[in-house]
Structure formats: structure tokens, C-alpha cells
Image (cartoon, rainbow over all chains, first blue to last red; front, side):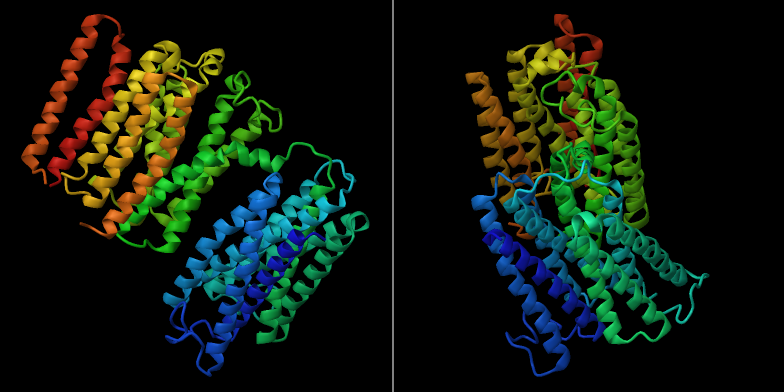
Length: 568
Length: 57
């Protein structure tokens, strides 16, 4: 085993222990054993009190687990960049770690809100799964095994998802106070709590059966992890039944969490093993992720997050933030998938998009459409049920605008396509604001305007780079219809206009001095790159402006947040 | 800080500029009415924002 694989394995074991210790904290009622964070009763070491010590041990393990995780990150950046699965998994793990630590703090400071506790567990499970994927991948890369399976079994993929959903239903049941509402009976129905409880039992039965089936069918070929997942699921199911039939003992409760986490580890390890023993056909899961255009989603979520921070004038409620980011990602992902369905004819003609899942033949068009519609409905449910109707309506409106006004109509009919169509991409900060406030105001409309005017220079810089491809696909982008020189001229005008719009917020009293300095400096650099593009007229200059425009928006919104916190 | 009157004045000036711009571009005959309409939308958006901001103060 390589040292990298060892660090990954230690990380996974550490996170597992952390989850089990978290269960001990919860079951023993020690969650507020240290009522402050990160200190305990204002001190580095806990007082000689049982609950304080239990909570302190949990925090100590959390801090210790950070060490192998940081080592893993450093090792991945140093020597694993070529292995995309490993490199991306490690980075994603570290990204998830940030909200996870913040959540841990919120859980204590807000005195254990049940839903936050459940989300805290869900994130821990995801981070542990990534550590397992990295560890198994690192081990298997060292062995250089030849493929033994033709394709990744879809049933195993669904079973893995099922185990995660099952663990979520368990956490939700616990958070809702529905754990002990149906003792000594096989089934109970009636009220909401009983329904929540039965949802967990029914899911456990179905998923448990699926895990056993996978263990039996894959065991002879894949050995340890297949059998381990079967045993873990069986033991876990038995502990659950014992809790119902005998008594909800604290020991059983801790073991139930430990068993759930062990089942999760085993099934993820099995899925990763099978994945690496499969001949390399294009990954279906990866194709569906590609269908959502994840890179674009990240930028949209950054602006939505900034909208939330500005609306809250401080730290917005964490559950609203998480639900809005999830709903936003679903909405944008759905819109992007439908966009790729509509554009499937021209995507095949352009080098940049010819490898997209539909033109590459990995996902049939109808499936992609269905996937996009499903994500959109899921987004509506998340926003409508858990955030608020205004945010739901705005997100749905943005999706409809992007699909029907931009993709279906403007994109192929006018060189102003991305100017007018850019309105869809300008809505996320408004949605973020609406999610926190439940109403609109003047500032979110100016945020909309800033992104709206930022879009043309950003997009035209890109279209100058790939003009020939748009030409081949007969998309009337500005450089094709009006020529490169006119496009560069308009980029300069729109850059000036954008900087003017960003500056106008100050005389209106919407932003202060810090923001003004940042807006002028960042905007000045933007205009500088735009002028340089006009002067030099080279692809390098276009690429420079395009890249800078991505940083520009993120930094400008960060400056707004800082300004509102420290008004001058 | 800009007061409501000044903001309304700015918005009105923006509208006048938009109309003047449209007239000039149209007179050159280089742009179709449809394209011109698309070009004017961003400018109109800005004018509306000025009005809105002025009225909300």
C-alpha cells in the first residue's frame, strides 16, 4: 500500500470514529456539554464533567482527523493531479469540510436544532465516502488489476444511493422525534410522526434486501467488500429490530449509527472496487453530471450566496443557505440539461461541445430531457417546501427564461442573444436575496443589473476565441454577424457601462467606501483588459479578459459583503 | 448621496439618451428595427432601475 493510500485509509477510519463518537455525544445527551465553541466552558481543557468530556473527545477527534485530511490534500496536489478521480475527490472533500466545521459550530451555538444535526451527519457521511473512494482507488491503482466486469452494474449504483437515502431517513426520523413512536409493533400508521418512522422502516427493508442481493451476486467475484456490506447490513437491520422489540437502549442506539456508517463504508468501497474492475466505458454518472454543466453552476451559486449574505446583513440562517444552494444547483442543472437537449443538433458540430453526453451518444436525448425536467421539479419542491414561494417562482422563472427565451428563441436568431439572454444568469443573486428576505428590494435589482452588464463582455471574449465553431453551427454570435472589430468595440463599451453601474451603488447609498475602492480597482482592470483586447486583437488578449471576468465577479461580490460588514 | 430628484433627473436623461441613440442608429440604416429594439433593452433596463431606485427613497 502506498503512503498516499495509507493516509486516505487513516482519514476514512478517523471520520468513521468521529461519526460513532458523534452518536455517543447525541445518545448520552452531551451535545451541550461544552456550550461554547471552539473552547469548552471558556477553557482549552474541559471541566471534570461527564458530558463536557464526551463532547470534548468528539471535538478532539474532529481536530485530529483534520491532520490526515490536510496531509491528503497536500499529497494530492503534489503527486496525484493526473488522477482526476482522486484529485477531484480530495478537493471536494476539503470543500465539504468547510461547511461541515461551520455546521458543527452552529449546532452547538444554536443548541442542537434537529435538522442541523441531521445535515451535519449527512455531510460527514459524504466526506467519509470520498475518503473511502480515494483510499480504494489509491490501493487499486497500485495493483494494476485487469478489468473483470463489462460494465458497472446499475443495481449497485442504485443500492449505494439507496443506502445514503436510508441513512438520511434515519437522521430525519431522529431529528423529528419519531424514533420511538412505534415500539413492539411491526407497523404503525396514522399521524405524521408515525409516517416518518414507517418511512425509515420501509426504506430499511427495501435497501437492506438490495444490499444483501448485491453481496450475494458480487461476492464471488469481488470478495471482501461485497461480503462486508452484506454482513454490515444484516447486523444493522437486526440492531434496528432489537431496538423496536426489546428496548431503545443507549448501546443499541450507538451501535445502530455505527452499523449504518459501516454499511455505508462497505457499499461505497464495493462500488469503487467494481468501478475500477470495469472496462472503461464512458461513465453514465459522470455523463449526467456533465449534463448539468457543473462549472457554470458553481459561478451561479457564488452570486446566489453573495445575494444571501447581503440580504441577511451578516450570517444568513444556515439551513436557508444550504437549501437555497441545493435548490439553485438543481434548478440550474435542470435548465442546463434541457438546454443541451434543445441544442443537441448544433452541439455535435462544435469542437467544444461535441463530447457532451448527448452528441457523444452516452445519454439518449429523451433521457436527458427527462433528467432536466426531474431536476427542475425537484428544485421547485426544495424552494417551494423549504425556502419560500418567491424564491421558487424566481428560480422557475429563470429556468423558463433560459430554456425558452434564450435557448429556443434568441440564441439562433439575433447577435444580441447573450445580451438579452443573460438575464437568466443574472437572477441568482436576486433568488439568494429572496430566499433570505422573502421579498425583493432595490439592492438585489442592482445586483441583477451588474451581472446583466457583465455578461456581454464575458461571453463575447469567449465567442471571439471559438468564432469558427459558432460559424459552423450557424449560431449568429456577434463576431460572426458584425465582425471581430465591432465585437471588440462593444466589449469596451459594455465594460465601461458595467463599471459605471457598479459605481452607481455608492451615490445611491447602497454601498460604502470599501466597495467603491474595490469596484473601481477591479473595474479599472476589467476595462484595461478590454482596451488591450481592442488594441492587440489577439486570442491571448481575449482569453485573458475571459479568465479575469470570472474572478472579477466573485471578487466584486466579496467586496460588497465586506463593505456591508464594515461600512465606512 | 443622490436624492430622489437627482435620480429621477438621471433616469430622464438616460431615457432621452436612449431615444437619441436609437434615432441616430436608425438614421444610418445599418441596423434593422428588430436589432435596434434588442440593443435598446439594456439601456431601458437601466433607466427603469434609476426610476425604481428614485421612487423607493
